[in-house]
Length: 316
Image: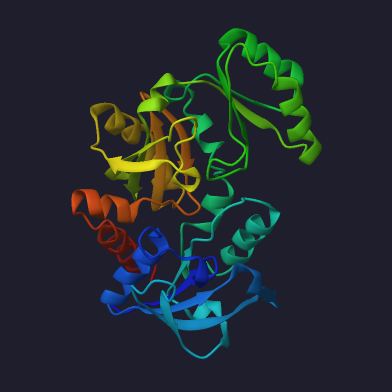
């Protein structure tokens, strides 16, 4: 099966060839003989029911600072592609949400992975709230009194922007920290969006595990350990990736969450597990494929493309 694949992602010059999961997926697609086309989400245009994008045919290559060879720049009908990989990084803002509405007009005739409606309706810090028994104590609110009452109950807390990513804007407030008021002033001066506030899980010092699910099935994991002096384990802010295995608790969590992901068309997902709790379900552009390949010798891009090819065949 040879597919034409459009990659909706960030600029190629930002790609880290040793860590980027989209690059890893593109390499596997290329090995399979699929043709690749790269475009930026800002070039999407919807007119009279047709979706156009402007970008380049590409051939990826594992060369630092030159991750792809570019063909001639072209404006093309996106519906003529077999598959679109929706892989731009957050922020999950109105611009991102608009791309999901536009892509929905061509899906599933052109298979969009992950399903754009599924992505739009599954903000990463909100989808997980459908499984409250799997989460640490959590409140989502813009009400300062509710946040203060939550802190009174749980004392040691983490405050997060609801639509943030990569660890940006995440604060750990210990019981004796008197900065909550100033922190809320700062957040709400920038946005009226609610915050997510969770009870602090001390197990995060041992790491925040990323579990990769493919079509609802757990397929691999890595641990991300925060650097000294930081409560955040995200690799974007200095967390160190280390090898990890799936535990019985991880599999129990995935068994509960997996059917929901399949029903929503969320084929490639990364969940974050701290201790016995799941804290986020990442559906926009999950990472970790290259780290798992290095630690475990397992190329998870292959089963992801197997699943995409099966789903594409099933929609013809």
